[in-house]
Image (cartoon, rainbow, N blue to C red):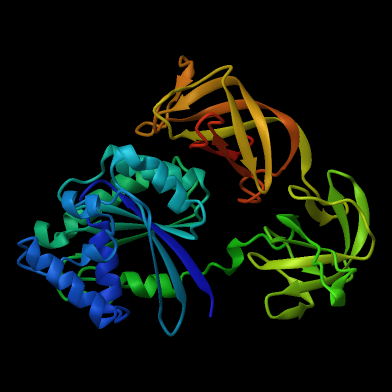
Length: 415
């Protein structure tokens, strides 16, 4: 049974948490004690109905304000597929948390209130989903019950979103009209919208094809840890632990270790349950090599003739997440795969306007929640790929060295 990771996004009060609560409730994946707790909390707040959004809004501040602040992760399964949901905040102040939730997603659900239509935050989230190369996007037009299930209104929003997304890199877009509060088109097809000929949201999530989204050609294995057990029965054991970022790694393959440039062969692959013949994304394994070559945390094992290029000059699209602006000359920590280095901002060529997608080259800094092109000079060469080919080796985070806060996230792209 395969696994689908998906993230929800949208403006404040578009119904993201309610949608996930309805999805869990109608698919019968909520325990009785959880439902009782939510019913009790709903009554204590004076609600006339069971507020299913409380299933994901776990922080006290979230429940008091009725908004999502942190990224809430939920897990459930159907007979066809397993799911990990990232319920991300809609408030502009917490856009950085949306980036966190969508960074590993196979699919993004962007909710739009049928009454309000597209908002600036809807466009921002669509832009972020495109920058993060989320392969599949669902436009969920919510609260259709409040516009009398209007087909005309749904088509207006779909056309507006399609026009905007045509300027982005969204390879697969599906639009679904629904009511998270009433449950229409969430798990079961709605009788209130006979004009809609598509599937319910859950059916789409169960059947969307994600196998071809993975890069199985370019072997990339960033080393996270060197395992040397000090035990009498494994004195000569030396393995390199990590998660396969892309490609298929097999026993007997000739591989190249970077940045040393030394070659050897894969002697064995150890998984959590024992030896394996091969490993593929996103398996966490330990790789043993035939030769004793120098490899440490931050190095990458790849194929001979197919490897990332080391560089100290990195140019990327960056989403800035800190109150203090990003300025030219600022020094930061950069974390790429499992390698940590220091970086200095050389230039900020432009900022991307999320409403018009216009590139503003007159700016000299990036403010909170801004997205722009940034050139960095790194102290230690990084082994990078274009993000479109590899989401792991093509991305990084920026860290404020004084406070250790994550202040930015970047994706390496040619343009």
